[in-house]
Structures are given as structure tokens and as C-alpha cells.
Image (cartoon, rainbow, N blue to C red; front, side, top):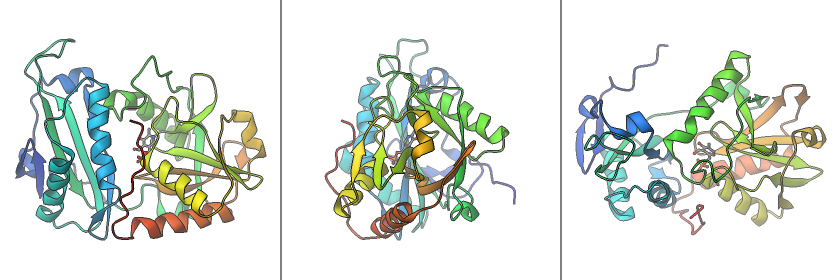
Length: 301
Ligand SMILES: Cc1ncc(COP(=O)(O)O)c(C=O)c1O
């Protein structure tokens, strides 16, 4: 089935405080955000009428913008109200929400002090991020030629559009070689994450994940760590060298889009979709559909 282009759909998008027809939600070609990647965004999932960790995402959007020196002209409560309006206008009970903020066309050039920060929120129906048939075998990853930059070379704690250039190139390189996604190493050569999801391994019964010191400390990542602690699963945050992947039994990814996805293979290494991955995947699926699960987790502020 051909994908319907995203600018040619029915529905409504919230743009700078007003609901507009989907096809009319446009930006000018000379927008600063388009030329210089001065944009930040969120990805959120709606489960049975409720956006999972909605306030956490609204806070992260504002924080991501602040890291780039952009000020979002809406409060967390206003963003929350706008998201609810978008869900109602589009009659969505399950799907994906995409808030985005960018510097406008008020000024052109590297300096952006005269620009305004614009905000839009769109939402649409969306199923599994990876093919559903991969659920039981796990997805495949190929190591990317691109490394995550150090925190003094890029705004690594912001969900900023500029960081996704290497994500897209990494994902393309993996897909072109027949893999589902990329394994990205960091600037030191440690295992970092996939192109748009954090990575966990299980080594001899211990759940391990790298410290998020040069990539996004995902809201799903934080949720899964808390779940593991609540379930009594031994956990440690530790740097992982690529060669250490030979000694792990299970690997999985976490992210709003990816949810909790098992990894079955990284090039010449195969992994089982084992008991800890299954337990956490089931627990995450149940938690995401539980009403009022907002919690006070910290999101890299
Ligand atoms: C690069 C990257 N890492 C990690 C994540 C996971 O973040 P979260 O769990 O907050 O969706 C995402 C998705 O937002 C991402 O794009």
C-alpha cells in the first residue's frame, strides 16, 4: 500500500495557538529552522485515549528548545491543552503525536536573535515502528560508520533536529545493507544507541545500559529502568564496548516509537528474545495502557 504523503492528509494541526486544516499547516521557505536545523521536536504515543508520559514530553520539548537558546512561547499546561485539542479534532484514540518547534523566517543568517519560535502539533494513527513479524525474532542492527558526537560538539541532551542528520544516514546505511536499524557507537567507541532508540543488554542476568552522557536519556529508557528496579531485576549503567556484545544473551531497544523491541542480531552475533526482555516488554505494554501513569521522572534537565 502506497504511503499517503504527510502534507496531503485530512485532519487538523495545531499551529502557533490555532487549529488549522492539515493541508494549510505550512512554513515559509526562508524559515531559519529549515536552513540551519534550529528545530526541536517530540514523539509521543497515544494508548487508549491517553498520551503516555505526556507532561514529561512537554517539559522535554521546552528544555530541548532552551538548550538551543530558543524560547517556546507556550507553557507546559498550554502544550498539554493543545495536544488534547489535536486528539479530539482528529478523533484519535491510538497513534502518535509530533510536537515541533522551530525558528521562523523573521531573520535569515546564522544569527537568529530576531526570530520567533513557532510551535506546531500534529498527530496521526501509527502502528508498530518495526515490522510486527520481527516481534518474536527480534530486529537486526548494523554498526553505523557515524559516531555520536561528544557533548561539547553538539547539543546531545536536546531532541534537536540537527542531531538526526547522522541518525538518518546511519539508518539508510543499515537498511541498504539489509538490516532493520543502525547500532551507533559514541565518540569514544562505546556502544551508544540505535538511530532513534536507546539500547539495553542482559549479561548473565544483569540488565545493563550505557550512561546517557552523549545521547538522549529517553523517557522510555527511564521508565524501563524504573520498571526493572520495581521488578527486582539487577541493573547497572555501564559503558559497553562493542566486543563485549559477544558476552551478552539478550539485547533490546527502547523508545516512544520503538516501544520495547527485541534485537535478534547485530551482524555476526545472534541473540535470543529471552525471559528478561519478554518480562519487561509485557510490563511496558501494560504500563503504557494504564490510566494516569504520569510520574516525576527527570528527563535530562
Ligand atoms: C536518538 C534517540 N534516542 C533515544 C530515543 C528514545 O527516547 P524516548 O524514549 O523519550 O522516546 C529517541 C526517541 O525519541 C531518539 O530519537
